[in-house]
Image 1 (cartoon, rainbow, N blue to C red):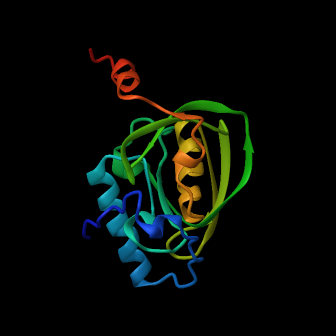
Image 2: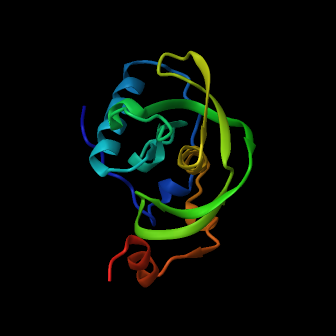
Length: 168
């Protein structure tokens, strides 16, 4: 496994639509393993392949609804994912590893069900609420070349961020 560079806003790859994964081979497994290591090192809750420079429909999402698991155990690999059901609404703070230091207020579904494939091509469904649902939506947006800043009702100021974190 190797750490990959996370592409940042301004890199044109982040604005492109990803292609479906058709080969569930060693190259895909290496990509997923590298993305896993990169996500854990960066301390994020999700990572999409375009964020590491690969235009393929692959994402990792931390299932924060599962308690008592390590960060490593919370990671769900989603290949060719698509949202098949969503309901409810949540509005809250959102950030992105590709837009460091910037946070905004974004409205997303409260509950999301995703259909995807695993690293071997087997189809499965998973679902999440709260932060996990937010993360599913956020990461799938990356696969279509969209950043959260496009959806943000507004970006938070430095003062608001300090206030939210309890700093003075």
